[in-house]
Each structure stands twice: as C-alpha cells, then as structure tokens.
Image (cartoon, rainbow, N blue to C red; front, top):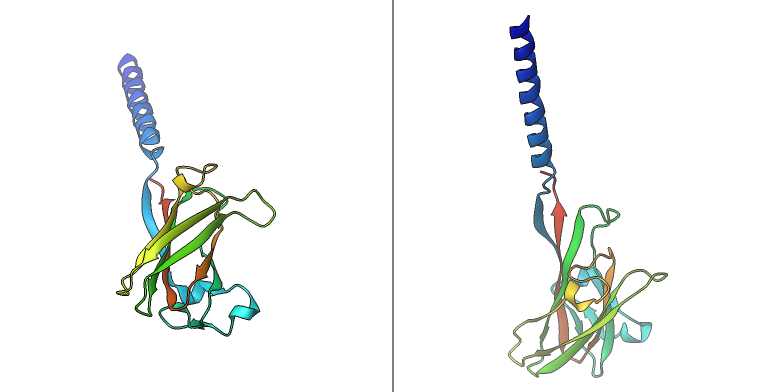
Length: 180
C-alpha cells in the first residue's frame, strides 16, 4: 500500500509539473508580421467634386492630370478585432512624379474615428523628376498618444497632389497574435 501511494504521489507530482510547464509555454504569445497592400486606385479618391475632373484613377495610380493642385483622400483598409491580438505598426503611401518635374508632396495622416480623439500628422516628401517612387510612412512613433504602435483600427490620409503627381501603392503593416 505504501508503494502504491508513493507511486501515485510521484505520478501526480510529475503531471502537475508537466501541466505548469505547458501552461507557462502556452502563455508566451507568438506573433507574425503581416501587410495589407493595395493599389491606390482601390483606396484613394478625389476629396471634392471639383477635383473629379482632374483626378484620373489609373490601374496603377491615382494621378492629378490637371493644371492645378487637387486633394485626394485615402482610407486604408485594416483589421479591427477589438484590440485583441492586432497592432498596426505603420501605414505607407508610395508616390511619384509622372511629368518629368520634381514635386513636393504633403499628406496629412489622421487616426481614429469621426467621433473620437484624433491625431493629425503631416508628412512631406520630395518626388524626383526621374519618376522614381518615394514613400510617406506614418508609424506609431509619429502619434504621441499611441507610440510605439498605432492602436486605432482606422487611418486615413489627405494628400495635396500637384499636377503630374500620382499615388501608386498603399500598405498597412501590423503584427498579429497567432497564439502559441
């Protein structure tokens, strides 16, 4: 009887140790980096009807083909799971000059919802005359209330496009909790 009790205690102790070890192991979250990408034509549009006549929605760009500046708004697609397991790390717009002239491009990134607390961050980039692309990137460190990540599920940008400037691609980068 004593041998059987000692064996039962040893087995129970081993199972308890194994259970505690597995619980500690499974408590460590595993994350992976992901990116949603899209051509700007899917997410960007002219900001006012007055700009509709000069903003061309090409397959690979939303471009100002007029003779004066025009505003475009891009609303990024991102995942909203109530803040559980999803953290935006940055939002990116790639742009270029398509008319052989260097241009400065300024866009204002806006976090949040229309009824919430919002943050506005302006980014400016020089687009070279050779047509090579440049990126405007908003990351968590740009937003004081949310650093080092952007914890809002919504983000939009308003861009002032000079004639000949096109927005090409958009990206939302984030980390996702995929369990253990």
